Length: 184
Image (cartoon, rainbow, N blue to C red; front, side, top):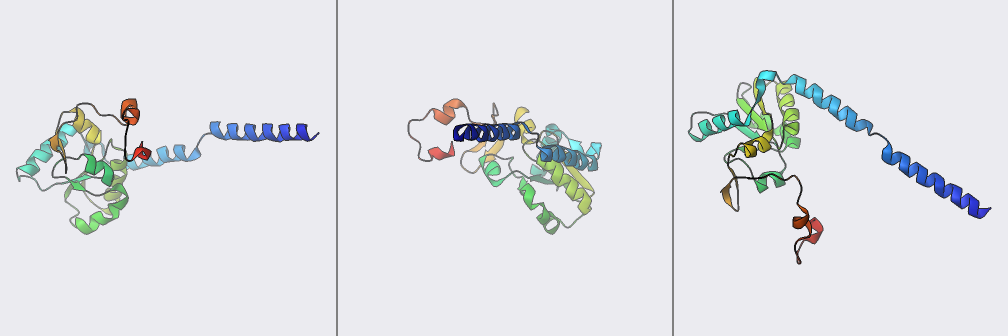
């Protein structure tokens, strides 16, 4: 009797775990809905390409533009590589932008890795009252695909020839010694 009871309890436990594994995440659907609502706040004419960002970047380098080019990726992403001379404010710290940029007519170009975080930040800036907010469609990935340069503190200027979102198997397991092996 105890054996059967244990088996039934064990079966119910496994069944419960498996049903949780296949359950849909309602928050994921809500996040997509909210993201789409934020994207609708940004006028279609305010989505720009990596080429348009590059043109504005060149104007800034030449002193012909005072647009703010704001990278909203994390510190780690920005430190790994970024577009030279751009500003950096993490997406979660967008509330500091009105303190840093008091002019509601300032030209502000927002970008991230793709466009997801940038669209949230841009929509909030538009809701704050900024009139000239642009989002780079494709973010730094589009910049990299176009062959434009990046920099970082340690290596200087470089171009990404192939972007990988995750380390390769060789990168994860190819070294015999690694001081911080728990990072991989």
